Amino acid sequence: MAEAYPWQDSLWQQLAGRKQHAHAYLLHGPAGIGKRALAERLMASLLCQRPSAAHDACGECKSCLLLKAGSHPDNYILEPEEADKAIKVDQVRDLVSFVVQTAQMGGRKVVLIEPAESMNINAANALLKSLEEPSGDTVLLLVSHQTSRLLPTIKSRCQQQACPLPSEAMSLAWLAKALPDCSEEERIELLALAAGSPLAAVNLQTQGVREQRALVVDGVKKLLKQQQSPTQLAEGWNAIPLLLLFDWFCDWSSLILRYQLTQDEEGLGLADMRKVIQYLAQKAGQDKVLNIQDWILAQRQKVMSKANLNRVLLLEALLVQWVGLPTQK
Image (spheres, rainbow, N blue to C red):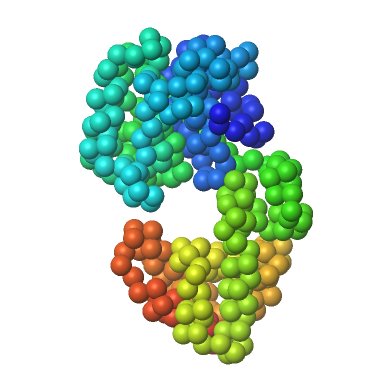
């Protein structure tokens, strides 16, 4: 059974409590807040033969047992064949063949697609007819972390349901149970690093991201004091995901710009980099900070598109620009 998260209670009643369901839902919002779990919970409820008064699946009927075993004949999950790859048109054609069939257990057919934005344009177009004219009692559940990457025609054919970030207080209360070995200060830091997404915060802790960030922050400080060179740092950060590094540097450049414009010390981000952000904001020209931010965003896009990049040279280029910021007023 998919986990029920406390910040989804009202959303669940709103979705699952309907007397008549839409033929397609688009659940969208930031990554790391449990949209996939919500979709799986709804899928189980829609297929269950004896759902509870709270609309949850019973977990005991034949339909629930088949779903738990991964062999329910009226359930279809569509996702990329490999992590971070596209959902291909042939995969969608197989799905369409499933959608036009009659439900084998006499109830609904339920399809889960996640992440929906992974469909390439041909795959998305192949899905459109099923969204326009679903066969029989079929419900399609699309989960998206970036709706801006979806075709407008896909979005317009679904009933859209926003899944907002939980409040900081609710996230921290949940994290206290999920990460009991962390201090409150560590949980606050993890939640900030995860941009407010509690499930992402747990993943970051599992991946050792706090330790990785401490290494990078220490390196940036030594770089600015000329105690380490860009080449040394680029080679020393070999185990840290490139996308994570670009996310941090992009965030830091945004904080520098924000402080230059507002002089608001409350907006300097996490404590580990506040003095550095303040220093660079005072010493660097705004146009140079904007230029480095544009460059970081462009390189980040290349990393996301799996371009064949020389990692060390790319990080060296970033750090050479970064160390030059204080002298470029």
